[in-house]
Image (cartoon, rainbow over all chains, first blue to last red; front, side, top):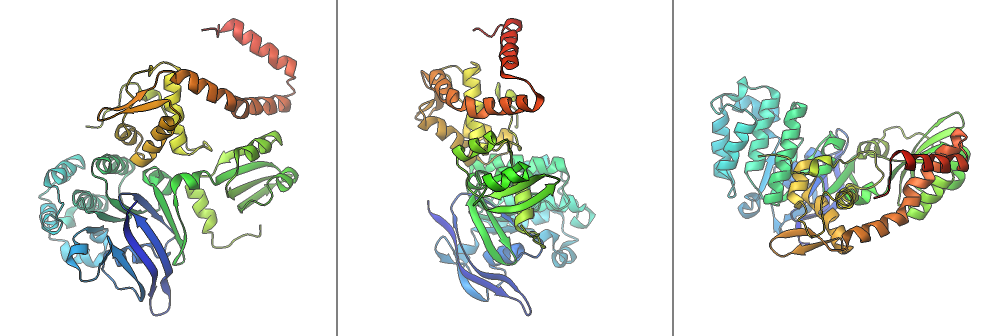
Length: 298
Length: 137
């Protein structure tokens, strides 16, 4: 597998806080990465650095072995969308029509597909002649999604691409993304808070917490390590020992524990024999437990 | 542009399963082979068809398909796609019989114990099911 993005010892220090702390990640070409983290974890800062919008305090980023800062060759391959929702852009762009945005974007990206852009505008039911200021938040998001997808950029950064989109528009977006990515594979980093909804689109998941990398793992590895085990507290304590327990709840003599660790099929069978009930732990719950502010004593 | 693939409608993925999505995909295809929705020698859905139907990453769908290729249940015809191998039904049955005990029997026996159903009761239930819904093929 070739590497699309290399992030080395990246740090972004703001006046009082470090938004990103000494982060090292390699991202492979043509994969969809889900970027998850709590509010303020550093997701947007990281994406802005990947897009070359802001400079790191320390460390460096390369895209296809090219430095990104002031490098047109690298920047042409990167599309960052979220910008339409930023307040500064909104003030500046209110009088733009949808088709002005689309036409401007068309000039920026070498792989731009105008037919695909037209098709998406149609599917989302957008009116090309409407001004951005007359659109709802969800519709402005649709415009940025259209730009992100029609750019067909080798590196596409989608920063919470669907602020304000209703459930049916989000599913249309998932549909289009899966289909278009199948035809035109590219490296996509997709930050989201709707974790369970979007997780099936991810090939890898990057979890960051307080500016640091927690993990960057293939989704199936995470699935094979995430369990919710329920049963008598005594049996749980003797059976599920030496596993990494990320959460525990007790009621009377029974407990539920969330495990983030590999469990062999023999171990699972022995747990079942002991009368324990084993369920899947969703990515969203795993996320909540791993990033919980006040860790309860385990 | 986004229409369902014939036959795939019966497939569904569970968020509650302890099995990763790619294994669920593989098992769904196995089920269709066992129930003869897909017959030996017939073509299987492409990774892109599976991925757009379930909104899953095509690589995840591909991993499910590849698992079955590795086990000799599917094979690839260059330029044409994936097909069900001859003898696939036997292969799947052999494999599934091994996991039947873990996946179904333990759950049934522990639930029966909770309800005070004895093993003899269970055997009788199985026999009467047999009489009511002739399970012989």
